[in-house]
Amino acid sequence: MLYNSDMNENVNWEYRVLSDVNNCIYGIHMVYLNEQGVPVSYDESPVSVSSDTVENLSYTMIHAMSAFTKPVLPYDYFNPTTDTINTAMEILKNEL
Image (cartoon, rainbow, N blue to C red; front, side):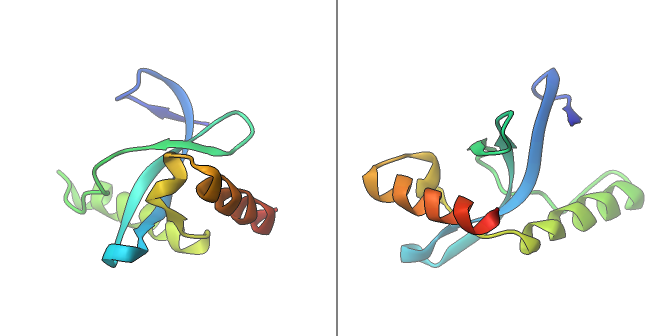
């Protein structure tokens, strides 16, 4: 569990690639997980690749790169409809 100072509480999160395939848009975002590790929300802005120190920049880049080791999530995953719920279930089945 990591501490996220923006939310002022302990939360589980990870970097994930989010996609809008129809518009050919991909971005790395912080994705927040529920207690079961299921993605439930995300930061609207993609990860920034600037920082106040080289060390912090390195930390951000290394952890952001971990997003490429997980399945890409469509932005629609967070606005559930019947189709996106089915897609999400397939993504989660493949992760287990």
